[in-house]
Image 1 (tube, rainbow, N blue to C red):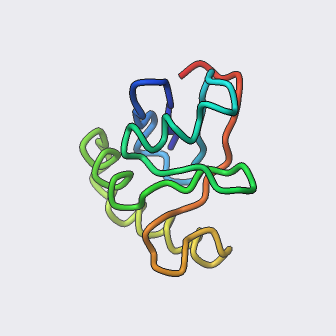
Image 2: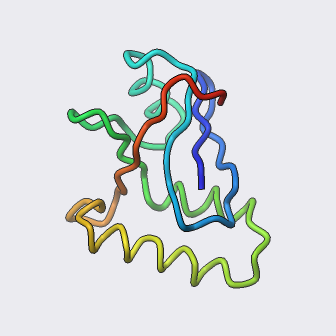
Image 3: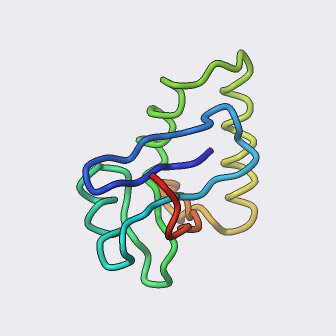
Length: 104
């Protein structure tokens, strides 16, 4: 799953692939936090990773997904992220690497 981030939107690409999660953007680093917040997708963590809103991500990915077992795939992805400490304590956000210079 890839969150393609532009100045005006955050779009979920490859929603059926719940084996990976990252943000791809062509925005400069100093514009990513504003774009994440403005799109409702999340925010930038002080360490530079994106903190994606779990419910927003789930809703957008589910709307674009085709896999009949998507809900199970999603749950497995979030459980794995939680086991690695990549989900916030309140389960509201999941950490994702930001790939700069990627077309969004």
